[in-house]
Image (tube, rainbow, N blue to C red; front, side, top):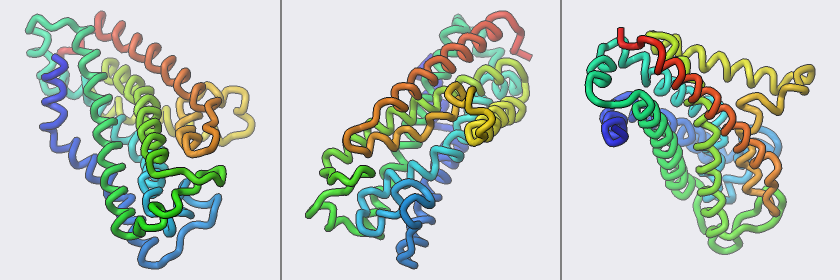
Length: 272
């Protein structure tokens, strides 16, 4: 069943369209910055953008800072919202469950498929933005002197590669919370659009509350609170506090909403 879901993932045109759009945004931003030689001042704009003119190898990190807060969650919500509701609407779910496939196994396979999508999307963004950074901003200064971290310490290209890999894992875990929420809503309704909009409304509301001082008491428990904590991998030493809290928080959201999805999927007729 896992193999079936992964094959369905790579055969869906919308998957590749979504990934293409995610990769396109950093490319467009890089073209504007390289042609004008004007980058946002430090502390303004996306993380790392102020340094990419002199350090092209930092552009993958800058690209992640662009897609993670909004565009990647939208893509995950769309795919997860369609996971059950879309197949129920088209009648495909009925034929899947006629076969000797347990519903628990089916849900797990869909979550693994969503995880594979996040990994594929982020890897493609990293790869295309790395090539873009080298082509448009150059790489010679990095080879000679290394890359300056957010703490002012010089990091070698090897250290940057390891921290990008760690960021990839953290971002994947962060997006699993989105996937679990949308997957739960996908078992509640037969409308993929309704499930997607419900998940996006949850995330938008979370983002608004995170920035609201009056909501400071609940801010640490909101799903989007620690999404950008991966930036702390690029400090020396690495600041683990928010990273650890972010991983723990997403684990709770995945367990709660995946459990709710399982309970609803096991007891409700979603084969209409």
